[in-house]
Length: 379
Image (cartoon, rainbow, N blue to C red; front, side):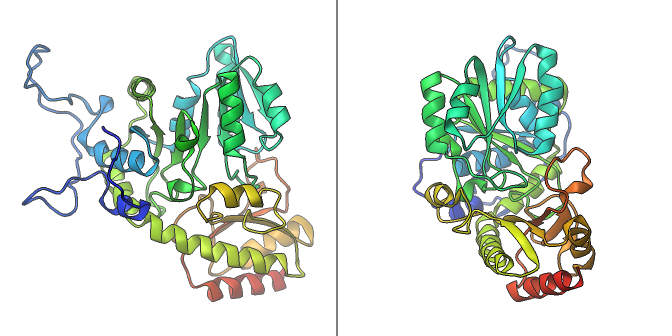
């Protein structure tokens, strides 16, 4: 899979990338559901197909892998059956006898899996405040991999990718970035030298709350080979229909994300001024400590995720969730509909018990705001 060389904007890549239209072909790619493929069984046969059994790869994965690679300015991407599967496969690049470093406020699922699995391979797991560059440099002593996430889930802290890239290059530590919240529309970690950009494809790339997939975009063919090997060995391959849905969802990623970010900035601004709200976490607010960094590296966007703490503690936060009518009380994020949840519903989540996380959708902004107003008034 070659690097995309055409001078196309991300919105155009999202629509056209990954699928080569031929005379007489369908405008939409076909759905590939086969689990096994015809081959002669003779390894010396040059006419044998490249696919044999779906666990090792399928043409049903190709269009999605290509478009994610192109959007991330990468040479390749590897799709998995979930974002957590993609993250675990990438974290497996950590070497026994060394350390893997993650942010304190990374997505708790990745923190939990890393803490559980890596020590079994004699790998120390270290956590660090990724916005404190001195702490990052110290934590990377003796490390073989640094995992970043920006903006983070659910506190929306912002890592300086320029600075992290410089430190990791100096210390010869490869790094990966969970780019799910920013999407390749707003941020491209591979351009900074990241070994891989990970996505929960379930979220913004899929965009419709109807699939679970993950992916890692890379530039190194050997890393792509290792990731595919881990996917095949463990059986964390995606399904053909899910890949087709995600490829279709990706076509509207740019337009959806622009609307979602516009809505999120307006909601965060209004919430920050509301007397019933104690604090708002959103990089687009000038008061956010990562605002300048986000402004520098997120292509003019600040993301479509925000979190806030209402006055009145966890009881008030729960009442807000229960009283919302337009916002859907559900976990996950990145879809066309706006979602809200109190993160304390997850026992392993260590954030403030009154923090509500919001995934902003594409609905009318005034409808969204009226919903928040009445829910805050009730709380």
